[in-house]
Length: 476
Ligand code: MN
Image (tube, rainbow, N blue to C red; front, top):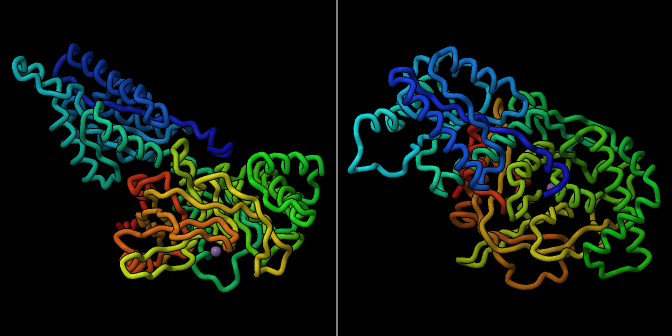
């Protein structure tokens, strides 16, 4: 995926708990086994970040030191804890009270099978995560620590996929702590759901939202050199089918290229991970920057139309979570319904701003009137999408807290071609069906804007919500 998220490298610390009751030989074996588990996970190629083995902790002082070290490591996205033997949990209390990183509690065992014919008490004492992890689980629950618990042998692909989902969520969470969103112009007038308290959001999620006059951006766009525009338009010609190459169409595409270069420059210089704009506030712009929003999303930037900074931030977080996975992640809006009995579905789109990471085939680059905003005809990428599972996610702010609404959906092919619809679009069936899925989404207060993510599963969002401590409503 794009250049904005390629660099999101971080680490997961793997902490094994034991005690001194069993002697040095047992502790040596514990260390060797936990190293082997870490190697199995890292060697699988399925965990998107490196897991770093830590020396076994056997005392309260060692536990506390290991947790303080994790907290103060800016590259540490989370900790995985495993009690290879029994590790009496009172020694964990003081350290766990300090824990500020996401935790996955891995309830595993070095051996997959019980060696029935040779098992003795030495083996039993060495391999007792079955009850050691229960002692650890008790104290985490007693302390109210949110964590993901995964049970199983690390040779099992399902176990690794559950760990990988959490690592992705933890990576997005670490990224969120330093994320910045640039907001060009304010909110679309009169719209409620896109408003919100940016201070509350920073307290809850770590990210900052900075407002700018759209004229500040227009100035950067104006200063883009013609040679840079020429070069980007050549890139467009290589990447996309351009059916209308008339002077008027190419002039509009050049304007869009200039906007893309200017917005990208503004975001890079301010170290922003996403942005919002609104068609009601385009002072100094010739057209709504739709193509720029599409292509910046494809590079990993968050985007929210009509000033929707919560969706811009959520979109970037989901881009980070999905990094390297097939399927894409896009800004989306439930647009219009198909109510044929038994075949209810939603056509999702936006005025322009749908991310080409979800395109089924090479997009076409087209110029058409927009119908609102009173500006020139904007360029946009037009495409359809691939059938398959996906999810829609919406972060809303209620009085005093945030709520994440997630609906599993099935993307399907449109019944017919859509020759007169000049925007990127997709069609999905919400789960469990349109009537129930839409009812529950609306009752939960889910927004009309969402992040549409064929690349992710509800497990990613569940892990993210747990880490963030945010209310989750899952519709499936
Ligand atoms: Mn909208």
